Image (tube, rainbow, N blue to C red; front, side, top):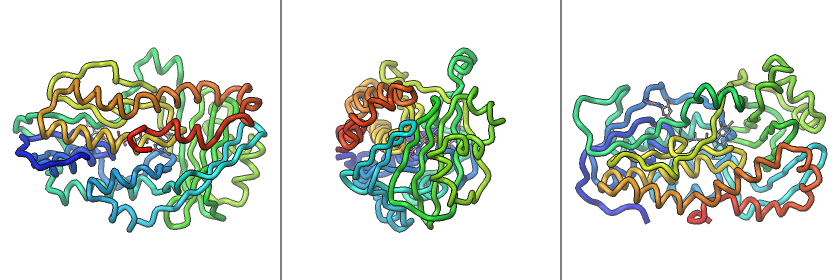
Length: 337
Ligand SMILES: Cc1cc2nc3c(=O)[nH]c(=O)nc-3n(C[C@H](O)[C@H](O)[C@H](O)COP(=O)(O)OP(=O)(O)OC[C@H]3O[C@@H](n4cnc5c(N)ncnc54)[C@H](O)[C@@H]3O)c2cc1C
């Protein structure tokens, strides 16, 4: 689907997260010289639920990265448990999903980009670029948005008994996801409004203990690293905006919706690969955005609408009526289903 070899110009990729590294690999496969600019040192832990939906496999395969991904021995996730207040809903996933830490996942893609011939840089080089992929992640919150929403993410890895389910607990406008990752670890990751976290002095252990179903679930687990925090988070999408010519925003720089569906990494790798191809081929930026919208627009709208209800009291009553498997499918990009 993605690649045919052409003589591309020089492509600059800003950011070597999943979107940027996928863009760099795709642009190299398309014949372009690539400069991959990353300001942080990799590998590093990152706040993320680390849930990868099964549709990531064919996308990684097209980038030549599936073998490395499977060699990292991601956990296999076969079930989904949704907890709304004290009510729970369980369903099998249509296909097993994956759990792999961002420490491993980002590093393996970054190494893949370098092995494909991308030139690593800390800052953009002096040479002009024919095209730029913007893959620097989420936009920072402007003051007004930050005041209005102030949602924070948190995550830590735990040891203890493992499960083969991704579990989501929605309560008090927050949610916490629990899922296995590689090497026997369990990821606990969540999103909560600042006012709720402040009640616990930003002590996530206290927050988990305050919600009985979560307290019970996490009791046999032991935390293996300090809590990591991120925020305030801003949900924003640029599908309606027209980027300057020869500029291709990808991943969270293109669109960041509430991460509870766990489609962020899939979307980042898909839009990154598309951005890399478009940049290497000199396709118009508007055509690129149009294609991203076709791939992701509907799934993102449904995720946003569901999230608006999920944190409310209403959800406890609606939950038993929700078709879990159907909802899971609706929140996936159509091309990946
Ligand atoms: C709480 C939470 C839980 C989540 N859980 C999941 C989940 O379970 N599953 C899922 O699929 N998604 C999840 N997501 C979403 C997922 O983390 C993102 O969609 C994904 O990280 C997007 O990848 P990216 O490459 O676009 O951006 P990033 O991963 O943010 O990478 C951007 C990179 O660009 C670099 N950078 C930034 N600016 C510059 C610059 N100027 N110059 C050079 N380098 C720069 C950064 O250092 C970083 O390495 C979650 C997000 C949050 C906040």
